[in-house]
Length: 348
Image 1 (spheres, one colour):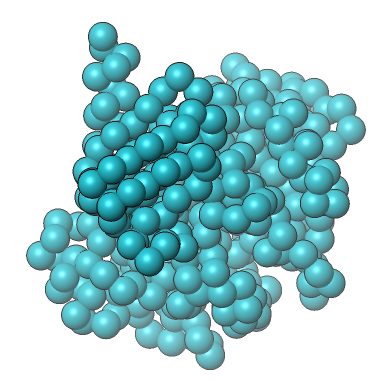
Image 2 (tube, helix red, strand yellow; image 1 turned 180 degrees about the vertical axis):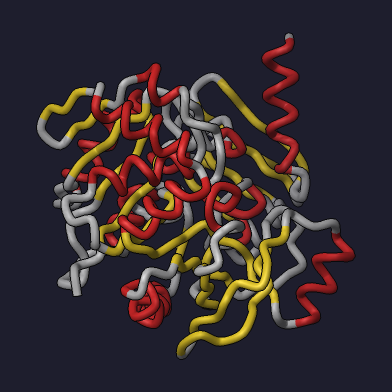
């Protein structure tokens, strides 16, 4: 079997974790959950004999950070593809598939800003998927749900096609609360975590069938682009012609050879400060603190600073984040509203 090529998608802006995460330095470039950044942790969970050097697809503005962070952990990517603009996951993965040196190689597509605590379980799920991938199936990894989350898409698990591998019955958009509770109770739905495994040629064949205009635009962007060492710069105008679509919408929901491997691996997409608090180590009062913070008679708070000193007395259930000249304060449970807050700030 060909070694697996990790494909790390690093194009997101991560603004839901403002003010630490910004478009210039998004969350995957930050050490939010460990001493390493989330990009570094993603690369490190796909190393060893079974894995080849990764392909990174990223925003052109982040090249220097990507090079320095991967170099710091001894990672030498096969290529770093620099998107001139964001066109969602389907075109980004097409870039990687077209640039893979072995068209039959399995591509392990991973967002750069997710947490996976149980890497051994992740690797076991990958091995379960490999035989179906060799036969040309497109495989996604379904996260075993532990709550009726309304912020995630779901996958209904269908009939088995191999040990630990099931046909996808259907993809479900982000549901209302009552529907999420019913799916959780049914036991046959998993979260759609956005992690995939398939052969490069199988994905390109699917794009040729379902989204030929997208495939043509991505091919042209590479043909008209530039390459310098591992750095690939697709042509902006051609890449802009690619439809702005997710891989789920463009391919996975349309193909009849799509499978899911359900896996419990301590996954979290760290999509908000509340989500980060839920996986952080807390003190005896339930506070998750990092940086220069003094907290007296305070409990169940998420407090972070990369510079300014934060002093708190007699408060509870707050999120307080200071970075540079910006300070965020809001009650726990409302961190999804950071997006609205940023929109209000821009309008002012």
